[in-house]
Length: 216
Image (cartoon, rainbow, N blue to C red; front, side, top):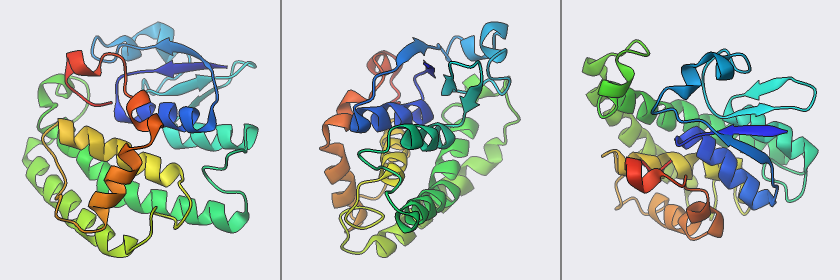
């Protein structure tokens, strides 16, 4: 298997997942800032032009970070980061979807339309007027999530899961692009610090993040 990796939050979620699983894959870095993900040699594998992507030995290419992590979980079930039972897997997916739909997708699009506008304006449809509203919604939903977490150490309870990886990576990215979360949130703040202390958090940062200035 060959992992197409890049400096971006979604690829970082896969890197952190791999570190937690102690899985080593062959990796090829794609420079998305130089537009390598829009070149034919990459598009022949992933026509969507997005990273990460996982090229399997039979030539099938899997895209979308969550789908890649789910696939790897089935291939390498221990330690379980989605879940060891049907109920555990459902709970992990529940929290990942809540986080993605309510929070991280709004952070992502707000970045496209504001801080990242110069880069994305010629690549995708952009709506700069929407950025302030998306940022406000993301912050509101983070406060909503803070209440839902309660006193649990992780989103799904006592288990550290893919959902925690997804939220942590995107919040760390958001901090670096001037979308910090409210550190007075009494449950989310210790949760974030708890995940940040895991060795995989720092180790999953892309080798070029300091040069580019984006934590991905």
